[in-house]
Length: 255
Length: 251
Image (cartoon, rainbow over all chains, first blue to last red):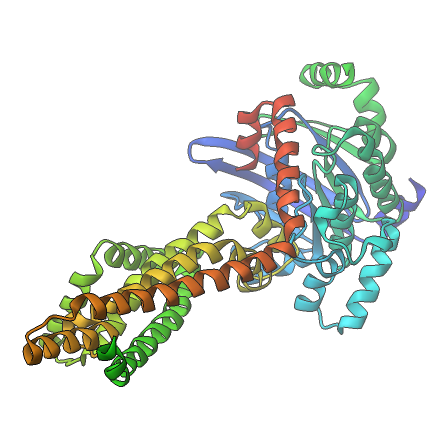
C-alpha cells in the first residue's frame, strides 16, 4: 500500500472515464459510468454476467466503441480514428479470457510480433525483452514451442508476457482465469500478484475474490451497466453498502 | 493412333495455349481472389459492398454465358478482345468471384478473438491482416482452392467456343479435317486422347497440392488440437454460466 501511495502522489490519473454510456441497438450496456484510476492503482471489477464489466474495460482500449462520454488514457482522449486508438492500445496491455495466442507463431514470435512491428527495436532486442518477460512468468524453456503445446495456464501466462513486451503502462485483464482448469488458476494469479506488486496499473475483471482481497486498492461491483458499489476491499467484503452487492457476494462466496 | 502421332505438333501447340491460358488464369485468380477476399472483411462498408457485388455478379453467371458476353459484348464498348484475352477475362472473373468467396469463408472461420488480440497489442488493421489473420487463412483454404483451380483448368476448354486455338479446338480441327479428307471420323480416338491429357493434368495438380497440404498441415497439427481444446473450454464455461448472458456481455 505504501508503495502505491507514493506512486499516486508522483503522477495523475492513468485512466479517467466520464459519463460513459454505450448501447447495443436499444440495449443499454453501460450507463453513465464515471471512474478515475490513478497510476499504480489496482482495481478489480466484479458483477454478474451481462453487467457490462467486460464491455467497460474493452472500451478503455477502444475494442468497443462508446456512444457517450469521454475516456482519457494517460492524459490522451480516446478518439475514434484508428491511428490514435492504435497508439493508446500500444500503451495498454490486455489479457483475455481465452488467452488468444496466435496459433501459427511460436511462443517467442507471439511475444516479439508487436514490438517488432510497432516499436523501433532490432530482432535481438525484441527477443531479449521477450525472454525477460517469459522468465518472469516462469516459462522461458517453452519459448520455441507453439501455443497449442502448452497448458491453458501456461498459455495465459504467455499472453501476459506478450502484453508486457510492449511495456504498457496499464494492464487490463478480462476474466483471465475463467477459462482455466482449477489447478491452473493459481499460477496465473501468482503472476498477476507479482505484476501488481511491481506497481503496474491494473484493472481486472474477475471473480477471484481472494485476488481482489489481496491485491485490489478498490473493488467495483457492477450490475446492469451501472457501477453499483465502489469500495475498499475490506469494506467491500466485510461491510458492503448496497443490498445488491450483498446478494452477489453471498452467491459467489458460497461456492 | 498414327493420326494422333502425326498431329502431335498441332495438338502440342494447342496444349501450349491451354497451358498459357490456364496458368495466367490461375495466377490472376489467386491474386484477385485475395484482394476481393480481404475487401470482403474490411472495416469499410464501401469495400465490402464492392466485393459482394463482384462476387454475386460473376458467381451467378455461367462461365459460358460470361465468356460469350465478354467476347461478343466487348466490341460494343469499343474493346475488341481477341479470343484468348476474352477467355482469360471471363475465366478470371468467374474464378476470382468463387475464390474470394472461399477466402471470405476462411476469414469467417477464424476466431474473432484473433483479430481482437492483435488489435489490443496495438497492431494496425493491415498489420493484423498481414501478420495474424492471413497466415492462418492460407492453409485451410488450400483444398478448396485446388478444387477451384482444377475446375478452371477444365474450363479453359470453353475458350474453344470463341475460337481460341487451345487444346480442345486443335483436336476439333484435326477431327473435322480428317473426317473431310478421309470420310472417316477419328473423333473417338482424338477426343479420348484429349480426355486423358486433361485428366493427367488435373489429377497431378490434385496430387501435388494434397501433398503440399499434408506437409503444411503436419507443421500445424498443434493448431487443430488447440482449437479442440479451446472449444472444450468454451463448452465447460458456458455450461457453468449462462451462455446467452455471456454472449451479450462480449458481443
